[in-house]
Structures are given as structure tokens and as C-alpha cells.
Length: 614
Image 1 (tube, rainbow, N blue to C red):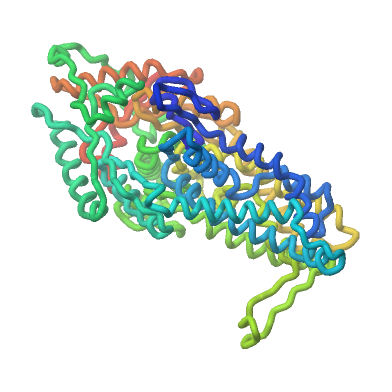
Image 2 (spheres, helix red, strand yellow):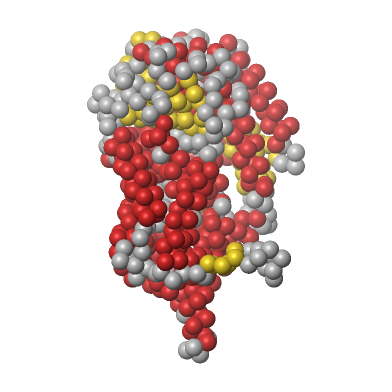
């Protein structure tokens, strides 16, 4: 089962997959989870009791509640995915469910879904409390209603799913990484986060390790770097865990037969030594460092995005450095929106949420790693204070017991006041990242160019699609305020919502302005990432975002007479030629170097060897 929004499981198996399990071979089925569709089914099933809870516990009427329910509930879609995993593994039909997750940031959010839904269940229980008390004390009805059963079901599912994830007899985690410094740093952070949440990682799988072969300047340098990183992985992450190496095949393992061979640990596929004399296609194009690329042009906002592990952060950092050095009069901001930030690792220095300059970099370049939860927390405080005013005005009460009283100074709110202050919890998933990316709109006043290093494909697309969902959410709240304007004066909240709505509208207009905003797609010249790139380009077209260039990263440009390098270069040339792309979309080729470029000087040298063409 794949839970990655940007599915590649079908590409790897060589068969089309959907949200319905498909038999691949005897005793093996495969499925690509459609979390939004699963959530829609869940909401259809539970819409009536959920609406009753919101009506019982708030000052909203049925029409208002219906509008809110049309928006997603945080954590529910991820929980539905986990419940589907649990359902399949709990049925007699499947003895084992193997889950192919999304890249790091999205996976950490997925695995935190039980806690997020448990919190929602607590809020819903609070909303239902007053109605339950009236029903029991005045109507003398003690049996649970559908709403009570839904709350209990959510709490139970969240608890059981969380326990199942932490139960080492039922669930094991295998962390897949590369023998690269950047991948090691991300692995250390992510495994630390998993274990802090009580989720044990049993095995580290180091993928695409070069096997021994005859001498080659490039391959030898890569092997030396890989051995160093593998040793660091064993030292920093290997204690108490199995570390497995998967050797790189000369041909991409694609389809059931090749994958089965890979699983058995068979030797890498051999290619005739005659390949050493076969001509390799020479890439057409000219040397074009980032500052000379038409694709970047006079843009004021440039996104770098693509599949996980293809080198987005490295390409974005190199482009930012070259552009800032070439255009000293322009102030440039390099901003990471990936929850699993890597800019600090690429530059080999701490970054953080406060913009800072880079050692050895030009003074007109500022670098920042966005702290989305902090951005949401700042907005949340403003919203909750304003919403609480309205709740109090329509009869909600709020009292705080003095310190030293029975509950030790804990703030207690009536159900109506509580929901007013918890409306942020009904915001679309990812609203924290939206409030973070809205800082782009504000930052335009201080910077001539903003370069955004995005999360991998699925997470990045959600962020780019989020302004529409978030603006709809803001508009629902605005309609509620207008509806009750005869009872309350919206005042502060209305001002906050108008400000947010204006910023979202500006961001929407900016994203769809091809002269101002560009999306540079970064990929690798292999079949699986190439197919994901084609789907990404199609989605960008539907979002009306300009994608003027695709970067094929880490290409074997000078293979010499090395059998592996020549075979790889020929396969890369075929994949580049096979890419379906929009008319006018340029191809940018970047060279494979060992070790990968890290630090300002190495990044700038590397970007000086980019080649562009059609």
C-alpha cells in the first residue's frame, strides 16, 4: 500500500494501480490509497451526527455547520489512511501489509494523526457535554445518541491506531536512506522524532550503494564518500538496529521480476563489457549557470520542487547563491517550506526561522527555514482572542478559577466559548504551512526575489492548492459573522479575517502570474521519477502555474570508458528524451559530482557547470 499523495508504487511495479487492491501475483496485492476520497466516504457516513455535535455546542445554525463540514477536518484524512492500513492488516485476507509512505515531513504528519484526531474527539466531546447534561437531567434520557457514539468511535480509533503503531509485535518501521551526508542528517532528525513518539525503527536500509568495480575517477570518488557516510550511519543510527545495504543496479529495477531479484539480494545486473566502446549521446545545449537562465528571468518568486531525494534543496541553494552574486543590487530570500528542512545541511551551518546570511555567500542573500507551527501559533492567538469576544457576546461564559483553588488555576470555558476558541481546529489540514507561506506576500516588500525550496511533490502540491481551500474557510467564517452582525459586532475578528483573506488573494494572484512566478521542477533521469515529473507538470498546468524548466539533476556527463558510467549515461539520455513536457519548457542538466556540493563555494562552482537546452 502506498500512502504517498504523489504515488509511485504503480510505476515501480510496472502496473496501473488505484484505490482498490489489485492482484500483482499470487499472494500479493497492491493499492494506492486515495486519502481525500476515503475521507469523503467517512464524512458521508458520519455527517449527520457530526453536524448535530456542532449545532449542540455552538451558536452556529444548521446552514453554518453544513458549510464548515464541507471543509476538511485536521488529521481525519490521515487517520482514515491509517485505519485502512489497520483494516487490511486485521482482516484474514492479509497476513502482512507493507506501507510505502510519503517523504519525511508528510510521513511524520501521517503518524501523528492519532494524536490529532484524539484532540478533535476531546473538542467534540466538550461541545456535546452541555447537550448531554440537559438530555440526562431534564429529559431523563441516558442512552447515547449517534453523536455520542461518533465521539466514542473517534477516540477509540485514535487510541487503538496509536497503540498499534507503538506495538513492536504488530508494527515495524524500516527507514530507507542514501549514503549521502544530506540524507544522513535528515534520517537522524526523523528517526529521533519517531522514537520520541514511541515508534521504534528496527532497520536502516541504505539504498543505491555502488558495488565494487574496475577503477573509474568518478565512481571511485563516490564509493569513498559512500563508505564514509555508511560508517557514520552505523555509528549514529545502527546501535540496536540492522543496517542493510542495497546495491545499485546498472539498470533501474522496474517491474515485478527486477524487484524480486532486488529483494533476493542478487548481484547487480551485468551489462556486456562491449558497452565501454559504445558511443554515448552527447547532451545538446550550452553552459548556462542559473544567472543566465531565461527560466528565471525577471521572476520575483521561484519555486524549486519535485520528487523526494532528487536534489531540490541543492539546486535551489546553488541558484540562490549564483543569482545573488550576479545581481548584487537585488535582495534575495531563499526560503525552505519543507517540514524536514535541509538548507542548514546544504550550507553546513545553522539556519532557523529567523533569516540570516550565509558564510561565504553574498551579502544580499538571506536564508530562512520556515517554522510553520510558529506562524500558526501567532495567528491562532489573535483569532482566538477575537472569537472569544463574539462567543461571550452571544451568551458564552468564561471563568478562571483562582490559583490555589480545586483545579489549580485551570481555565474553564463553557462549551459554546470553547468551540469559539477552537474553531481554528476546523481549519483545513496544512493551514499552519499556509500562514507560513503567506509570509512570502509580506516579504515581497523587502526582497526583489524569493526562492522557495519546497517539500517533495505531494506535500508541495497541497501547499500550492491550499490558498483556495483556506480562502474558502475564511469566507465561511466571514459569512457567519455577517449572519450574526445584528447580535454582535465582529470588530477585531472581522479585521483579522479581512487581512488574511487579502493576503491569500494576493498569493493566489501571484502564483498564477507567469511573469512573476515560476516553478522549476527538479528530477532524476530515471523512469520512476520521470513519470512523477510528468504528473507534476500536468498538475501545475491545471493550477495555472508557469513551469518553464525541468532540471535533470546529477547526470553522468563525462562517462569516460567506465562500463557503469557509460551504461548509466545512455539510460539517462533515453529518459530525458522520453519526458513529456509543455511546449517551451527548457531542459537543464546538472553534473553528478562526488562528494555532492556542500557549502557556498562548492555550490557556486557546481552551478557554474549547468547546461540548458530544449
